[in-house]
Length: 135
Ligand code: SF4
Ligand code: SF4
Image 1 (cartoon, rainbow, N blue to C red):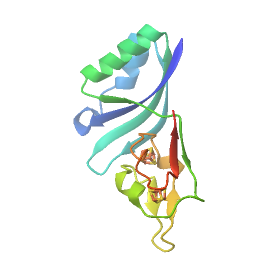
Image 2: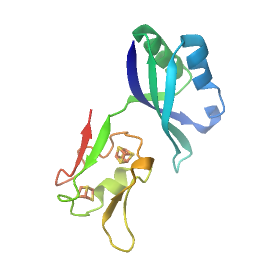
Image 3: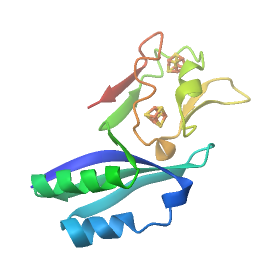
């Protein structure tokens, strides 16, 4: 039995397909939707934790890919060191869900953990190494 965290990216035309239902019914997997977002370019993103026998997890992921869904491994957590941060805003420009943004009044960086889907795009973008992803 393994547990895997993945990020699903899917276009609007398959948002209504019962993909998670198929994961349970056809592949006998347990799943937990940790976060879901619709991004500005109308792509859906879901952070999903799936659990089951290794071969079923792999078969379930292949099924998702065959349905046109892009799969990415998710990090475990993101750690922001506010003492190091110089509020330059570079991470804001790569954050697709706007979990990282500069406050309009204070011009300091805010991290909204509830919006973060752990995609990892902000990893390595910080000039002072204030963001770290735990894999
Ligand atoms: S991992 Fe970074 S870039 Fe991705 S959603 Fe979270 S804060 Fe934004
Ligand atoms: S890139 Fe680094 S220094 Fe710049 S705002 Fe983001 S965390 Fe702060």
